Length: 228
Image (cartoon, rainbow, N blue to C red; front, side, top):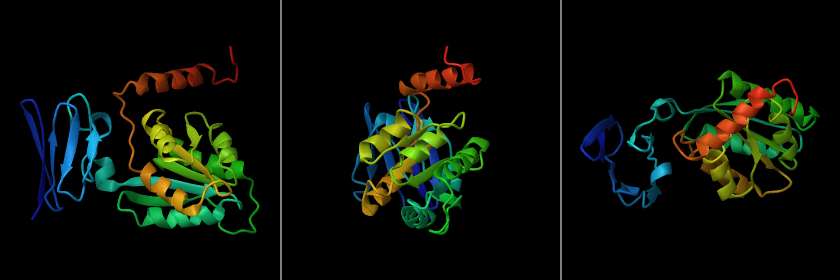
C-alpha cells in the first residue's frame, strides 16, 4: 500500500503519496516531528526533512522532488594521497539510496601521480556544468583540493573534519564541494561525515542566503582578477 505524507500549516494541507510505509509529519509552531519511533527526532524548522520530502519555510511547501525522486549526482576525486579513502567513500555513496550516481574523476591507481589540482578542477567543472550536484574531494590534508576547487568560478569548496562544520558548510555557506584529508581524519569518521553531508540542503530563504549572495556578487564583479 502506498504511504501517505500529510503536511499541514494553518489552513493549507498537502498530501503526497509515496510507495513506502506510512510516515506522517506533523508541524507545530517551531518544529517538525517524524513518526514512527524509528525516526525518533525532532527537526529544526529550517532544516526539516524526511526521506521522501523536503520543504522550506515559511510556508512548509515541497521545495523539490528532484532529489527525492532521482537522488544526488556526486563527483568524487582524489590524488594518490587520498585514493584509498576516495574509493571507500565512493562505494558507500553508490549504495546510498539518496545518491543517483557517482562520477569518479580519479585517480584510480596508486601509481598515478596526477597532481591534486587537476582532479579538484575536473570534479568542480562537473558541478559547475550541472553534470553533478556536488563533489567530494580527498587529498592528504583536504586543503590542497579545496584551494584548487575554489579557483573554479562559482564553486564554494570547504575542508571539514567534524559534523558541525560539514553541516554548516551546506546550510550556512551553500558549499557544493566537501574536502577531507586522508592523513588527518580516520576512515570511519570520514565515512560518517560523507553520509551526513548528503543529508543536508541549503535553504535559499534562510538568513544565510544573503551572505552567500555577497560572495557570488563579489566573484562576479571581480571575475577579471582585480581585487578593488
